[in-house]
Structures are given as C-alpha cells and as structure tokens.
Length: 321
Image 1 (spheres, rainbow, N blue to C red):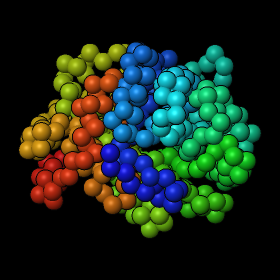
Image 2 (cartoon, rainbow, N blue to C red):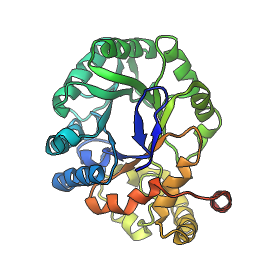
Image 3 (cartoon, rainbow, N blue to C red):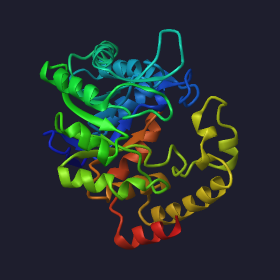
Image 4 (cartoon, rainbow, N blue to C red):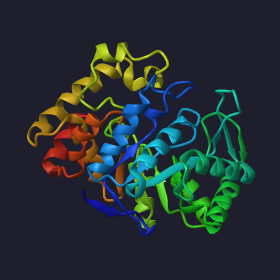
C-alpha cells in the first residue's frame, strides 16, 4: 500500500490508518453503542494483512477499552504489529464516566504509563495531546506544561514521537516554543473544512505531519447511512446528538452522498472511499484515519488509499456540498 513521509518523524505511514474510536464501545458520553470485540480485533488484523501499517486509539475511547482491544490484536500479530498512536489529556476517575481535561505533568506521566500497560508495549510510537482545551470543561495545567512532559517522556524512551490533536495554529505555535510539534490530528471532511484556512497551511509550512480524523464525517458520507438507519442508532451512540445526523442537515447530507456515489461509480468505488480520497488530495494531509469495526469494512475501504480523484471530480464534489 502507498505510504507517505509523516512530517519530520522519519516514519513512512500508509495513507489510511485504522481508527479505534468506535471499537471502544459504550459506557461514556462519546461512545458508538455496543461493539463486538472479536470483530474489532479481526478488523485490525485484516487491515495489517492488506498493508495498513498504523492504528490510532486513545485512553478515553471506552475509558480504556479501545486500547485493550488494540492490545489483543497486537498480541495476535506479533512481529507484524503496526505502529501504535494514542493520546493523553482526557481523564476520568475510577468508576466514573465523567471526563476531565488535565495537562499537568504528573497526569500526563500517569496516562502514559497506563497506556503502555493497556497496550502491552514498551514504547508508544506516537503520543498526542488529545485536546488543547475540552469544550467548556476547566483545564488543569497548560499546553506548555503538558507538552514539556511529553518531550521529557520521549527523552526517557517511553514515547518515540510527540504530536497534538484538535490544535489550532496558535496552539501549535505555543507548544513549538517548548519542543517541535511533529504531528497534528484534526477533524477534516467535505462537511467540515474549517482547518483549510489556517491550520493546514501552518502544518505545510512547518513540515508537520497531518493525520485527519472523521474523513467520512462519522459515517455520514460512507454511503451506508439512511434516515431509517440514523433513527435506529443506539440511544448511547453520540452521533444521535450531532447536527449532521439531525434535520435539516440530515436530508441535505444524504442527498450529497448521492453525488459521491455518482463520482465513485466511475472508479468502482464507494461514496466513503471518495470522501476519504478527497481529503488525501490536500497537500498538507499525510493520511486519513478510517474507523473499522469489521474485516469486511476494511476490504471495502482499502481502495481509498489508491483512488486518485481528478480536478474535475473535485470540482463536481465541492460544488455540490
């Protein structure tokens, strides 16, 4: 599978990677409803079989459960294991589902040690600060304190590379005064393009690797969503509460998917593959995170890594959204 240089990390990563958010399952505010762990493990293994060389997870996904599921796959894969990216700064108390935001050095250190244990690895390939600030929640510590601790943990050999997620250019500029920012993980899709104005140009100018999440807008652009399926989502699936899955945007989004379907038909590709391939056209984007929960989903989406949309395709797509 095609790879690209991941900023200045020295890593070459495949243009799509396994996203492990959904496989964390239910039990917290941002869960995707019940998941089948065996299927999730099989999906990760199938992704590696097909050439994908990295997986992205986080402690908060299922309050530790996603990392545990990833660990099962890593044990099964042995020496074939992919690169493992995870995150820090979102924490919870034992027995609680309440998420807090903490950038204090001691908290970052505890999270790193906990992730190492859950994942069953000696070194984390990429540790990312999950958020610079978390909606309206108070933040303990600062970007500078948290980033300084990640740099120290890298020096100690606990982490190979350090990056950020959901940071704007101004946040990365603050962090870079402590240590260079190696990577950014922002949201990016045809329905969410705000980072094109400042964030992506900043990353391109500074050689920061970019792995985008939700390129299919949490499945809305996959081509498999219908109004009936959205209505049937589990009550604890966070997507039920988001504007893109509610009217009036829902009907508009489903109509837009038909444009992606039309473009995809020219290449034998799904609407979701077209949506992912579109994000990969941006010169600042290294790769896209794609959430896989079943092996068949991997097989359906792996072609997005090779799909080359033309300028005419992009013009048609962008003119419709």
